[in-house]
Amino acid sequence: MTGFYYPRTKSGKSAILPPVPWHYSGELITMEYRTDVEAVKALLPEGFELADEDPGAVAAIWADWQSCSDDFNEVLDPVRLQYKEMFIVIRCKYKGKTYSRCAFIWVDKEFAIIRGQHQGYPKKLGIIQQTRPVNVGKAGPRLAPGGKFGVTLAAFDRRLAEGVFEITDTADAPGFVNGHPMAHSRWYPAIETDGTDSLSEVVTMSGFDVDFGRCFKGDFDLTYFDSPVEELVDLPIREKIGAYWHEVGVSWKAGTTLERRTLEDIG
Image (tube, rainbow, N blue to C red; front, side, top):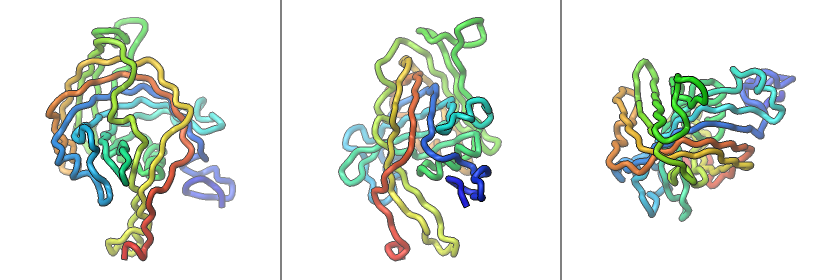
C-alpha cells in the first residue's frame, strides 16, 4: 500500500494528502491583543509554561491560502488548491525555549483538516471569510491607508468571531506572537477508549523558503461570540497590540519530535 495518508492503496492516488513538501502562498490578516494571563495558562498542557515576556499576548489570524504539493498539479485544479482558515496563536515556553502554539483553528476544506492533524494543529471545520483587496473598481479596499477589511468566522450554525481591520501605514513585520517555531501536541486516543492515548507527542516545526511580501499595519476591532462547543469568549480582548495585512509564502516538509510518550509511560 502506498500513499502519504489514508486511504492507502496500491497506487496511492486516493490518499487525502499528497507527499511532502507542501507549498503555501497566502494573504493574512493578523490581530494581536493581550488577554488574561490565566486564560492563556489554561490552554497549556502539562510540560508547557507561560512565555517569559508578554505571556498574555494572543494573535487572531485570518488567512486566504493557496497550497500545493511538489508537482504543482493542484494549481490547475483550484478546488484542491484554495482554502481559508482562522486560527488563534498564543506564546509559550517548553523546556526553556519560547514557541508559538496554535490553540484553536478552523478551516474550510477536508485536506486542510487532515494536514493539520498530521502537524498537530487542532483543526476543525468552519466557514471563514475575509475581504480581498482590489486594484480596480469600487468593490473592495485598496492596499493603502484607509483601506478597510472585514473578517468573519462561523461554525455549527453560529458566528464565532467578526472583526474589521483598517490600514494606517506600511509595516516591516506582521507582529510577534506568531513569530516563533510552532510547538504542538499530537494526540490520538487508544482504540480501547479507556482514557489513554495511543499517540501522545510534543512536536515542533517551522517552514523553509519563507517569502514575505507586502505588509501593512493598522487598527482593528474584534468581537467573539459564545457557542456551546467553542471557547473563544474565554480569551477576552483586554488591550490591543496591533494589526496587520500581509503576504507570505512558505514551504513545509517535516517537524521534530520533542517528546514521545509511550503506552507504558501513559499507563
